Image 1 (tube, rainbow, N blue to C red):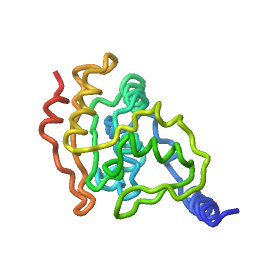
Image 2: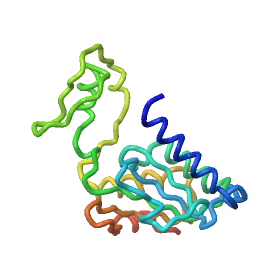
Image 3: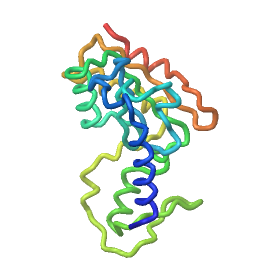
Length: 193
């Protein structure tokens, strides 16, 4: 058993012994909103948004991008579980700003091992073989945080399964201060009508 696996199972045991009334939380989120944000380990939506278990849906992926799957989750969150406001929250110093589709595809084509980020950029350090399958994925990399938040809210707002009356708010989380910074253009696009 790996050290990480042992630590996770021990933490879960401790958590489960104090689970208490959480067994009675309803399936719909109590505060009726959802957050789409990045998977970056420095972000803790429960802390930066003041959430307790059962409060909100939190959807996480690389960059907090509005992928088809993220939109699928938001639609389920609304249609079946009653969320009525959505937050799209990207963040400063995001790893998605460090590469392009071309860089990722080149790295994957030479090796499937973990790459290294050096001063000169990403470098593949593992032996092959690689795969050309990456070229079929739009990695939704980020060139400008504010623009990517606006782009994602547009992708959500204009999706045929998203009702116009759901407000969608756009923010950037500052990893140096912990503050949420509003992206005015994004919130304007996400305004409910």
